[in-house]
Image 1 (spheres, protein in one colour):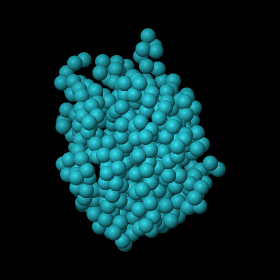
Image 2 (image 1 turned 45 degrees about the horizontal axis):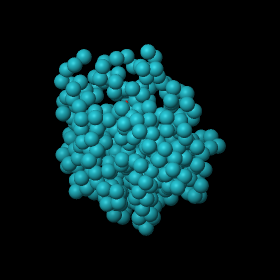
Image 3 (image 1 turned 120 degrees about the horizontal axis):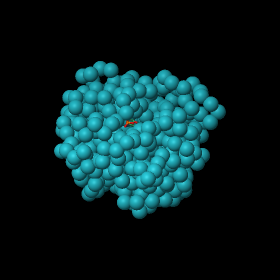
Image 4 (image 1 turned 60 degrees about the horizontal axis):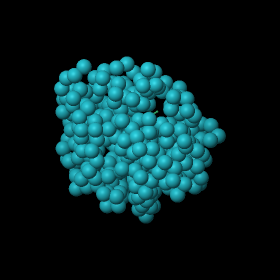
Length: 365
Ligand SMILES: Cc1cc2nc3c(=O)[nH]c(=O)nc-3n(C[C@H](O)[C@H](O)[C@H](O)COP(=O)(O)O)c2cc1C
């Protein structure tokens, strides 16, 4: 099927100096296939290389420092062994013709001492997350976090910067700062998880401050054209609630305004209402290409992705579960062909099943 919509989705776009052959971005997808030290494994090399035909791959959330780790099996980018492991992934993706950014994720209070090994977990305020945490010893109540002191916030920013430099050393084309989904930066943005009374809490501008400072510091270190950020305004997840519409609008407008001078490669927004005022206002203010994803409740489809572009609501679309199940998603969607279905039972199981064994159409024929 050939129409303008299809042509739009499958035409080129530039993010910074990187030219993408199509506007389908592989969404960041945690799959817990790293080893217990967070080093990427052989199946991760294979998995990402299989998906190199997507316009851009964004890796799973990767911890910058051990205190930012959220799960066993999650990869890190802190130590030399992580850099060496990720180098194998980026080399394989590039050899297959692809492009790859690393998502850097500090989990903040969505963690446990058994995961960080530092004797504490950290957050903007000493407020526990609402849901249990998966630890190596089973599910545990979310601990009350240590509220970061201002000088410790400086260390968190430095951790993101070092991780971004490590990602570039590992051959990544850029990084995505995880500012979404209830993890550390989002915990600062949300008034439900941030009750600080200093310069990082209170007003919308103060709650937006850390995300901006991290984005600025990372941009200064590796270049704005190699830096992106993921946001999820009013996603209301993991206790990072943003239920007041006018406060959320003011917060994300402040955040987006702070991003504008950085000339970011792109901003990735997860929102059930991507065409709405909040997302589009942030888009105008941030002055960067906009990638959207409509979130978990309904899986992104080819039709939805095409319509998002056709309507002008987005410059590109991030695709999660369809990219898990279809290594050759671009081929299938561009030719309007049948698709494999993702199996949620194998999202986090740790081996190759449901990870590297989804067939491409070429394997079947
Ligand atoms: C298994 C799984 C793991 C995910 N891991 C991450 C992650 O590490 N970082 C992130 O920002 N979003 C993560 N997400 C959210 C996805 O990036 C995406 O927003 C979500 O799957 C909705 O898009 P879809 O309908 O195309 O699947 C994850 C989603 C799934 C299903």
